[in-house]
Amino acid sequence: MKYKVSLIAIIVLSGCWSSSKLRDDFPLIWNPTVGMAATSRFDAALFSGDWIVREGFNDDWGFDQFNFDVLEGSTFGTWKQPDAQARVRLSQLGVFFLDYMGQNQSDEEVVVLWVDERFRTAALAARNRRAAVIVARKIDGGMDRIEAARVLLRKNGFDISQLTAIEY
Image (tube, rainbow, N blue to C red; front, side):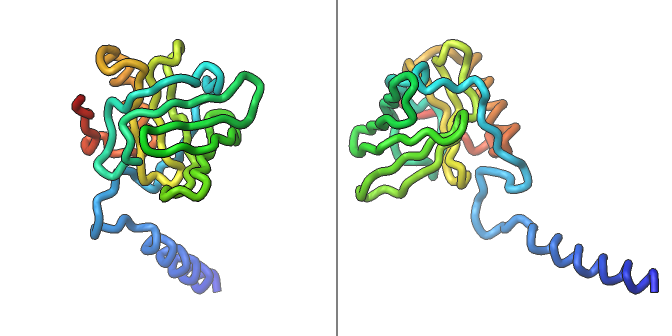
């Protein structure tokens, strides 16, 4: 009887194992077995301002700059790209939603994986893990912070070997 129960358990677990295998018919920029964690340092008022994408993946959001604007103490704000605008709704610490309000863009849940102490460089990822970027306040410099952002992307399961610098 004990062996039958063990055999059933092995069969059930092997079925779970096969369904969690990585697919190889498309390139992944992330490892689905790694969890995603938002930074506890996030402060929407300090994060507000202009940002430039410094590095990203080929299938990223399709923007190279944005303005994030949330007033201190508010849970709503705006996200402006050169060709689109979204309403920002803060969710939990380091997580916010972008609502593109009927535009030709899908709504997105964004996780701030890391931001440096002075809010000059950050690593952002879509919660669905289809996109991630490293952003900064300036178009150049801060390579130590860019490297720190890469480390956090890697720790959150992203394949940083596919990360490419944005040329301006």
